[in-house]
Length: 170
Image 1 (cartoon, one colour):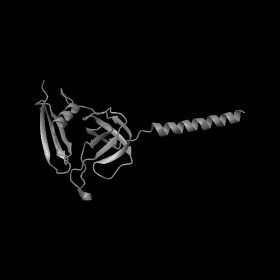
Image 2 (cartoon, one colour):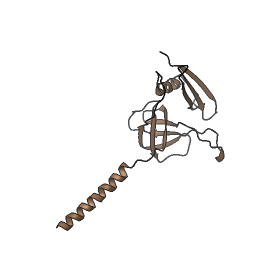
Image 3 (cartoon, helix red, strand yellow):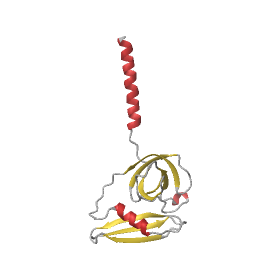
Image 4 (tube, helix red, strand yellow):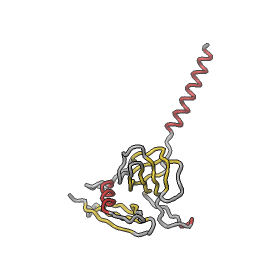
């Protein structure tokens, strides 16, 4: 009797340990970046930094752009998020089935009145793109001396750029 109880206990602890290891394992996100468009069921996420795809026959500035599905609208344009996904499509922007999405913890060093999120929202609110254009954030910098935000947008299809400056003073 004691021996069977011991075996059941060992098996139970082993199963629990395996479950804890699998479910609590931290993997790095598949994509970290800004939400640049939203629909009721999807978010368009752009990578923060471009990749140089020239060695593969592509463009110098390739931004990963992925539409991810969401169950409820908890994210807005300008949110900085970590995304884990699977079942990704091969067109551009890509579409993926979301495993997990969370707001990314990003250290902000700016001593600014407006936040990065507010600036991104202003930029996309003020930008009226043609349906064949898709602008991503190419540069987002805060000039502490002048108290001005500088934002450069880059159209991933035409490679056209637009620049914006926003005064941060009250």
